[in-house]
Length: 210
Image (cartoon, rainbow, N blue to C red; front, side, top):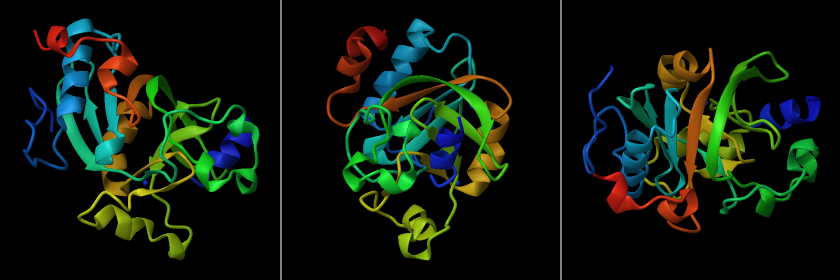
């Protein structure tokens, strides 16, 4: 547990429907692939009546929904420096100094999240506890990393900087992430970037949209 906490310590309006593609309400719009995953979750009840979030790595965005699938809000995020959809085995037990740049991935998958704390006592949301992946407020601890500037930039190419954790703007975390996932379990779907989400999660886009 201590090792996992150590890694994570370094890693920031109810609606009846999610924003349509191209719409910019309170954050980035859903990509077409994120919309497919959302349709599948709503149609299948895969979220098991828990609030859920879609983390779209290709768009560097997170979209939050309540337990009934109603959109709550969206935000840009910072993600793992390295592209890829799997964590290196045992990475959650390794000191940060031993994690090479090419190993700093944000793994894709369906994760049951849980509230937690880092070594500094800050509240975080565990996404994958075993591999020490969490969602937390962005922490600009190293000025050279320019994490706040990366979040504010108009491009998504510079949003890859973390050790794998999902960094969220402080205001968005406090307004939506903490009350939605910081008190009880939720589901976090991290969309893959090396293959289509439908193939990764095992659903048919056409069936999900019915």
